[in-house]
Length: 475
Ligand SMILES: *Cc1c(COP(=O)(O)O)cnc(C)c1O
Image 1: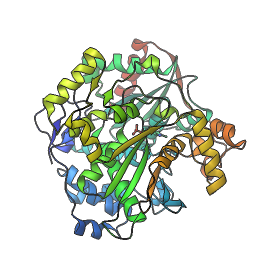
Image 2 (image 1 turned 90 degrees about the vertical axis):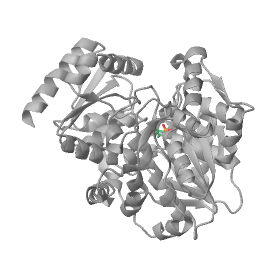
Image 3 (image 1 turned 60 degrees about the vertical axis):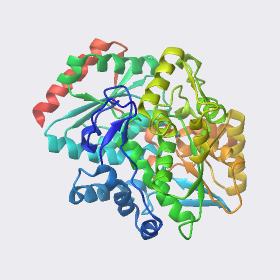
Image 4 (image 1 turned 180 degrees about the vertical axis):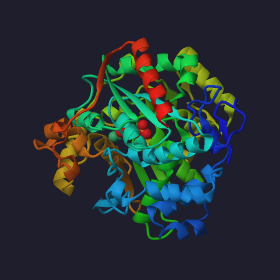
């Protein structure tokens, strides 16, 4: 399988060539030249596979330059009951007839990002060892991504993580999760500032080409293709759990921010999985809902982003959306380049009244948005009707899903985090705190390891350089 850019300006590359890079050199996103096709007979043979075996079948065509004898054990080491809490890895829970919750949040950081990030950790280590080099991941986080990345890179050779977070910006639980790690290759830096300051520092450091090369700086953000690919697997897993035979259709509802999760659902559908609807659920930040309704794509400036009680979806510009637009316009890279050029010059584009807009329906996409009061009400309803506490993001998905339920078509809502990560909102909705998994009891009281620093790019570079040098010497 070779990879190209959505904007057409990249020589086709192999999977391991694009694994560690970010954007394609022309500013586009990397996509496979074509999607592998799975026929019904093959699908039926996958029904009984366990998660790791299924993941190998789904992912192998995308990662064809990794030999089977390496890829199979790497995947098997990733998706274990030990790491994900059950042999199912992603279990399907029935709420009532026709309505299901897909449990994707039982990994180390209790959010669905672990499903992909854990595999990414293994893949990075493998590829870096083969290339005989180190990588220093620099990131900014306001919560889920940073801890998921750190837990994925724990104890991995050839990789260090430098994660910036706003000193006051995370919940006590999230701080305890990240700063509770005491590992030589993980460096938490709390910045005296807000999340935007952290992100600005990452941008400034990455813009210094000489420093970036000398310190071998990389990222693990949501445009990483391997993360999207790893997420395709659980759409297949859920399909088999909700149906009896191939040919039956299911729908998925996906709480969406950067559009990575639902993009994986779209790819599963393009590969031949019988998916009827892909429901894009947004919160008050409803750029995507607006697009799917009207064809107008108008990302907001970051100052207009609402801070909501489903914070992992507070996003102004969905970074994976371009991968979907590429398919909508029939993989016409010149058109993608023109459309996103228009976003840069004029702030928006519109597909209203074009064949590309009609393709939205062909691709099964529908959408809706939710707001704080809906979210609280959905959390209360789910608790009263199903005895189940859902996190605020999952609640957005559950609420929008209601509009699109159809008789005979199971609606599968993706559970993107466990409620314990967002205790305040649960208490606001229910008056009681959510249950806490045993291994997280009292984590706020455990020792924490973090360096507090000013939002000063030179000081941060100095901090990184010293640790990069020491790490290289030890290895
Ligand atoms: C990241 C995240 C999302 C959004 O997923 P995208 O792939 O960015 O669309 C939704 N819910 C939770 C809890 C998340 O952490």
